[in-house]
Length: 72
Image 1 (cartoon, rainbow, N blue to C red):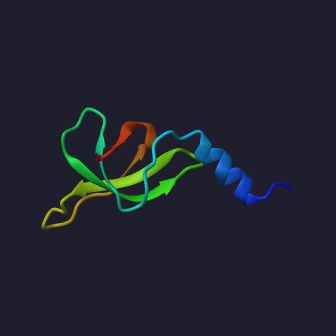
Image 2: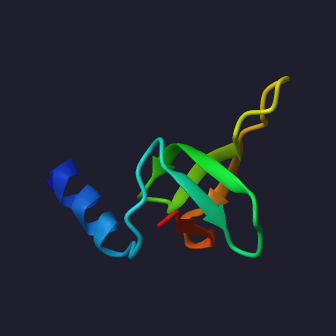
């Protein structure tokens, strides 16, 4: 039986970008800044919301990690 550590490390090797929960990032082809709320490395998805937050809240949505660029 494979350990979950092996599966997680294997998934991370396929992802080139170093993106962590709480990071502010840009989405491909957009100028607005977004905050990463969660990451699923095994499916290469993350959940983001617009940053800074809107007064009435910012909707959260799922996007492929491949469409996210670090804010460096």
